[in-house]
Image (cartoon, rainbow, N blue to C red):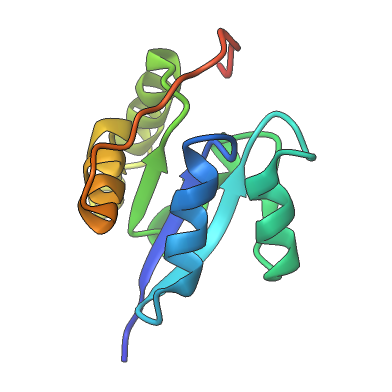
Length: 125
């Protein structure tokens, strides 16, 4: 069975429950998790599951065709813009960048209630 290969950018309040759900899904391979802080709960969880972690979100994009979906839950527009620019510059028409609102929708559906998020003003770019 082929797995959906997912990279996550943001391993804090929003990213951590999403990372847990993805790690628990037998049809998903989490190929990397990025956050500025190594001690974020999602980073710790990823390392415990032998998933590559990084402080540079572009490392996830540089996985190229080895990542199907990049989920950006940073809430920082500059992150999405830099990801888009990189995918275009490398002619990567395969990888999809998933906006955090889609992640919130997915998590809300799985919990049958609206999940709220909040972000600190951190410059990820």
